[in-house]
Length: 475
Image (cartoon, rainbow, N blue to C red):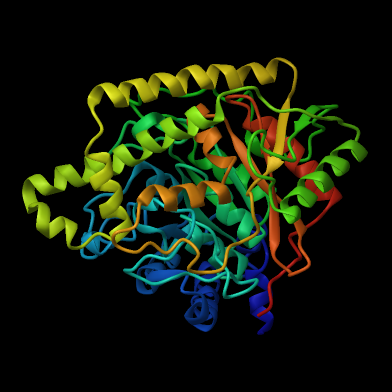
């Protein structure tokens, strides 16, 4: 490893400070990043669309903002960058090139970030692993034959492997928090509507999806949210604005919190022992930090919530494919999507408008049930995942299989994260635990709607007590 590569392992805030003090130039950072990507990416398959020449050009231009000159990666799903392919992980869109930036990408540019490429993702973000047929599987830097999670797996693998200090991610059922857990990173899903989806969308189906990033440090996540949060004209909703900068919350005392934690799922099979050990360890740490920690969880109809969630989530993809079929025809579209996506589409075609509206109403009702938990607690603490990172290929789908079996298997892996997409609440996966196999096991903290500020205060306290930034996977 070169001496300059040590600079690449700094967080984005530290890299930006070096640029600001003129100890390193943006072009040097970009060139170092490109060299790092070219060296480690072939074994990981995290970066699927290099943007090296554009990045070199941008690094020599006028850069301003809190992250001026810092290299960044966009997920190839939702990372809308004018003139650069946006495949959404699908052969169907392998040649699609948008003509405009999303508002989020414009804000990332205004923050001074230099985009160096796009990262691997599950097709349409449907599964919690990153193994698309278009690009092939992305591997976990900690152990290559295990999943890096999904659907923002490429972004997480890249950051964990030292390619960039942080990377774009989005989360419709856990797709920020799942790969953050698998790769030993910090991953915050903001409150619904915190970051606009303009200009192409008002909201995702059910309002499930939220955009942000995976990062190594808490301060990077907070500063990046400061730079990108906020509504655009015409947005259907926006949560209460923060009382002050999210970055100012980092390092501030969270006070004595009432934390309810879950080590099991009532009425269902026990979670993997490593995930139980991780949440018990986190509960003990929180107790040592002076918080009031008791075993408790929201009371709600879990089976109905997940049934309605899957219904709405898959209906969104079906609607998108229907729109394409109007112009391209059924066969052309179906021949290019993966067998799992096709099976989900065919099953979802039996959905009626009445069924969809009822599912949404069920989600709203159950979200109210869950919200009552915050009358007695400040935080709900759970494992991020039900199992450690799965071996690559565990969720491989074969034509003719029942797609619900694959979905049920996926939900066993992610029994908690979709809940916060349904409710819209902010949640974070924090890398506090590694198992005996050397794989990271994230811990999941959920706050009340609109209260990312509390999560940042707690996260920075945990980061100080149990630092993880210096942990690196084998090179």
